[in-house]
Image 1: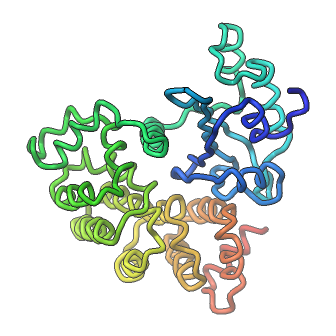
Image 2 (image 1 turned 45 degrees about the horizontal axis):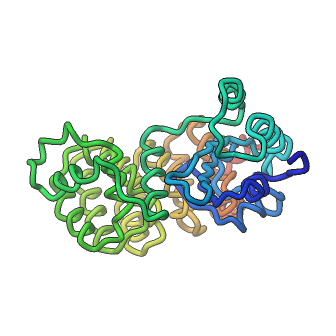
Amino acid sequence: MSAISTISELLTLSDSQYRIYDIGRKIDKISKEQFKKIELNQQPYPFPSQGHAFIAAAFWQKGSTAPYLWFIKIPLDERGLLNQGARNHFIAIIIEALGSDLSADPTQKQEALLKNNPYHFTPAQYKLAALNSIIGVELKQPPSSYYQNCLSYLSGEQGWHQWQNLGVQGISDFVARIDDKALQQVLIKALPQLPPQVLAPLCSALENKKYPVDVIRSLLKRLKSAIDSGEGELEQALLRALATNCEHIDVTTFADECLLTPEISSEQLITLSGRCWTLLQTPARMSHYLELLIAKQDNELFTAIFKDLVAIPLIRPILFQCMRAPDRSPALAKAIGQLFN
């Protein structure tokens, strides 16, 4: 086991089936082939967050009823490539603790070694719930015991004010199964009625899923209503819910007509960069976004969002193109100049 040089190799040689997810921004599956290229520094990490790769590795051996989960936080260099030394150190800690049998129940000493792993992190509860649901669906496992109560509530059988007994895991289980057309109709009918206490966790789960145009339009309608009525927190939640569907024509049209206006809030600008960055992959929309950002006259906000966006491989070349655009405003040109000075 001492010659193992990648996490992929470690999982393969342990006779495990495995899947890799990014959970730094939202939950995005990374193919085994792509992850191997990332580990060999043949391509930058696609979803960097705060200068790190936040990785969830789910693995299991034949006959196992549930996968084991590792949550791995590895620093990236200025090019967005995986820090090889940190990755190798993580592997060394795992091998020292568990050897070749990754599924073995660790002893107290091994458990202590694993818990002291500097590359381990604990994801937010809503992300853990969503990941558990996504993996469960992919492995064709039944939903949790919270699912039926959630389905009953969203079907309108309990009264919209009776949300106190809903579990986040049940909401995540429902969203993970949103490919089911019957569940799509349940969601569409429920959306106008849902109180903020239910809508917020629902949107957190929805941000990881693609769904059909009818669901997109229902969410956009509720988002427009939240914007018109000044419900700031609900605006952020509903905008996040559209994160994986930002390239859909209905979402881009809505953004251009209703969202990317001078009235856009700083919080919305942050959500766009943090969750909905694919919306900004056209030079025209990116330039407009940057002008709206600089109009906030908040140098710290501009610097933070610029650093966040420039780290995303998909966005970096578009951002650089907009920085050099001859028609950029004097204020934007000045802010960009200050960044590099």
